[in-house]
Image 1 (spheres, rainbow, N blue to C red):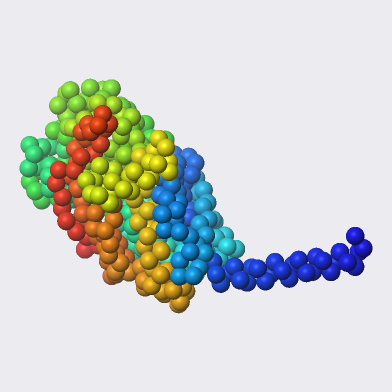
Image 2: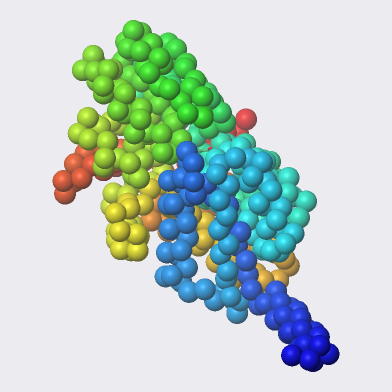
Length: 390
Ligand code: PHB
């Protein structure tokens, strides 16, 4: 090609590109979804990505005249990486909203960026109470550990359990679970005889479980993050702790629907408290579970998936009401106070705290259609995060 002609063509192409970008910027609504897609928390990323894509497939990718674009990034659950990716998504991709956040340290590392850039940050997984206080732009669609733990501490003493050992992952959500479970249990006349903490990274549960076996409490209360429950269950059973008369209880992270069916019959009878079970008996949940399984053969949705699914719904509805006016602040305002029926049950985003108010269910692992499920047997309605009252 003649050199002058070539330059001309290139200039035209660049102009064209700039023009397309300008149009795209105004007409596109970008969601930066940061998740652990690899590493120890990979199941969380897999579940939330699948749920977000399902929501978009069911509800279309045009909202309020804008094309919704989902940009998924893998932070490998390393907080510095989460923060760097958030920065890039804000500055380079100009995302309208940040979402995801598989673990508490990732959410906390990103919160200041949400504040500086006035970008709503939808926490779909992480569950330490204080996360919503780290930035006025954080809105949560998952749950909090105090929410789940207090409900179980009310059930325990009414069911013949007096002496409990707690075993938690040694970071934000574990410390919340330990504190709120203990406070409430003691208030109810129960006793925590030992509080054990295991490291978050590559935990070895063996020495801790041996200690529990020696103490021989009525029950062992466990919080470990989604993905780690199967290892605890296996080692608990291998040590014959159930046969020694120690009941295994915990927040629903322990009997995670992502892993539960592979845990074996030894898991039968384990009682947990949580906001979501794939077996929640509502028509809406049945529809959700069926659609999720159809789109993701071999995968059952867990509580991470529901945080992602409802998070997408909250973003879509906020975009519809704000019509994209008022930028991040307009979007944030339209997220506050949302109330809707989720596959988990009724759900409300408290406008004051930007945290989720929801039912907490007591569940027992049982067999249904030949598979292990968390079967709900009691419900505490409209639970606010107890961590916010302090
Ligand atoms: C968290 O890091 O906040 C977290 C992760 C996984 C869970 C619960 C909480 O299952």
